[in-house]
Amino acid sequence: VIVLSPTIKDVASLAGVSVATVSRHIHQNSYISESAEQKVINAINELGYKPVRNIRNKKMMTIGLVIPDITNPFFSELARAIEDACQEKGFAVLFCNSDQFHVKEKLYIEFFMERNVSGTIFATNNLSPEEYNKLTDAGIPIVVLDRIVNNPLCTSVKCNNYEGAKLAVKHLLETGCKKIAHIYGPQEITTGNERLQGYIDVVKDEPWYTPTLLAPGYFEIEGGMEAVETLLSRHPDIDGIFAGNDIMALGILKTLKRKNIKVPEEIAVCGFDGISFADIFEPGLTTIAQPIYEMGKKAAEILIDQINHHKPMGEQQAIEMNVELVVRESTQR
Ligand code: RIB
Image 1: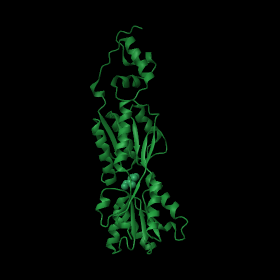
Image 2: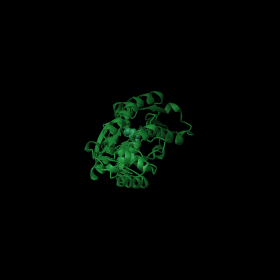
Image 3: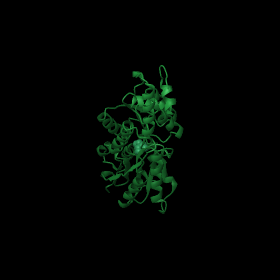
């Protein structure tokens, strides 16, 4: 086959692959199957193709990270772990706050593709299969963290929210609580929903249980403050509260202190996340600690392995890490 000045398209058609696949071989910085790579090499040799290495197209050694809100200590601790792991392997991290808005997450997908990042980590359960494929078809792997979608299109890393919630409520029962409320996170978020389910599955057969012992806290401090006011107006005799995350628990402790309600003597409080502030709270907050640093580190290591070894996106893992009950003053009755 004699082609005067072969182009990337000539290589692709001779090799029987897409231009994107030839490009991935040339830039050597995203996954490509071994069989496709061999076909491309044979075609390049046969045509005597000389790739023009367009520096602009060279992938930046950058990871795109999308988290709901960096001001929530859970996500800042998670981001710290991810950045440590990426920095160790020579990758910079682009931090993006989505506020859990799907429209912002879609914008970030475009943003990452334009900037040719090497890989992405999303803490969201909003993305559709098409949105995943948009990234992976462009040779940009994605790992999903914490809030997991149900489509196994990519590796995911989360904690065992359901078991953790049951652990929290059983601990409150063991401390002698006779009527336990739950302030829950947004139910459209998988972590909020799994924790609510864990609470209900432990208390649903208790004679005192009623759905009016549930109140939304939106995973926010102010949400926790308002929810405990609502619950106490409905049930002044509550003596235990399980909060769906630690910053709502912070709001609960503040409101109970303002109302001169003693914690844990009158109301015991248990949170969920295990942020470092939980220890500084007064009283110290009992919580279900997620392995925050390990989750972030694991997600980053898996992603970088996919980037460096061109792992086909088919080999995905659903990783679920265990949580741990950390008992402090807020439940020691
Ligand atoms: O505090 C933020 C919450 O949202 C955490 O519990 C975390 O699991 C995330 O889902």
